[in-house]
Image (tube, rainbow, N blue to C red):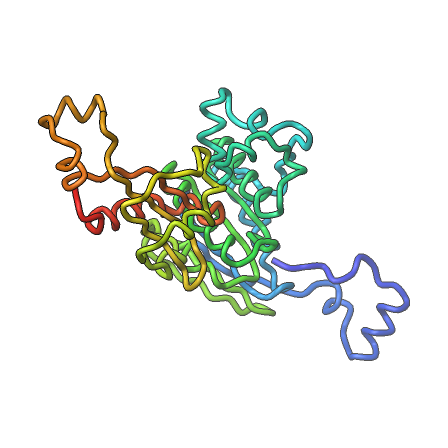
Length: 323
């Protein structure tokens, strides 16, 4: 594959070519790929990295052309997605409300207020997540993305990369993602990693096609005992009443000093129909000694969709002090 350096030999181009001792064939074309063999299947996660201008986009276009001509399967390029700018998001994906909620939630747009916003009202990160929802909806076999997550902050990029490979794996789809950023290897967890340098130099590594078990950001988080002040900081992201009775225990999920999530355990209510069906009748004192209930679980919107709610519940249940 090659890139054309100039459309025609203008006077200035010829002057430069002569000044640097370049023949016309040298400046007209320069080789970026030479006899490169790639093995890519319909469920592979392909991560193409390299410096800007090294030829990532040329490769992506060539692969997209081969997919359409040789593999005869459908593909969708994120650049070709044309969102409806002024309609509420909930009306622009899925055949039904339920399907729309599921698609938007899969990509982290799972806030009631976001459902009612238009595409134009979203941040860059939210717009990118929305386009991934449209890719999932398309049912195309190959999801193709140039400048992948380039406009996102690196934390959000890692979350998007983790969720992208997770959804692709669940649906048996392939991903071709090209970017200058090399910090997404763990979260995208590619089965094919292509690193392109300037000139003809290229490195191709193949790995087992297995989904990443958890987002890399999760490994940086710890659960600690918290306070009602911790709950108040995230209460605004919970839809139910922000007032809670005297809590029994509160636990926080923190990444360094950043508060990522909170879970609140309370004393059991005096009456509960379901509890009466499965437990013997107990006086209130005994109930308080033996049982706790989870009244609130809230995760900061930035960190939703990477399993932190489940992590909070699973890892704090043994710390609650009661059943």
